[in-house]
Length: 162
Image 1 (cartoon, rainbow, N blue to C red):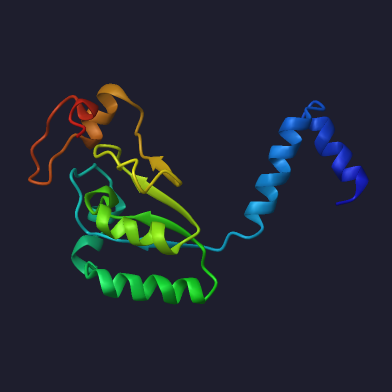
Image 2 (cartoon, rainbow, N blue to C red; image 1 turned 90 degrees about the vertical axis):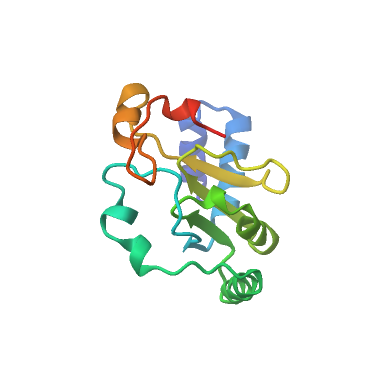
């Protein structure tokens, strides 16, 4: 990096060496990241209004790849083509921790997109980034998301967590 750019970044970070070191580390890691998105299930424990997955019938047009050996073989082929980072989506990925274990085993970096209702176990998943979908909190989340797969509404969405 040119000294001018390096100095500008350091100045922007108010001369904080610790932040600058963290910035350099993130930059180093991110230059190696090769990401792909993986839909691991068509199942979900709620039916949010406007959810692209169910609104556009992806749940009906997509087949779950549920056999452990098939998933493992697929992930190894992904790694062999240079992918080292997964963004895992569903349905709701936390409904299938055994499938997630394969990502932990094979991929270097993993992120999971979840509705936050089912906790991801800490054991085996401590290095996962967890992205939780929220629609605004409180009653707004209840209005838009507190809908069971059978269509029945409920309240206290995050009190429902297991």
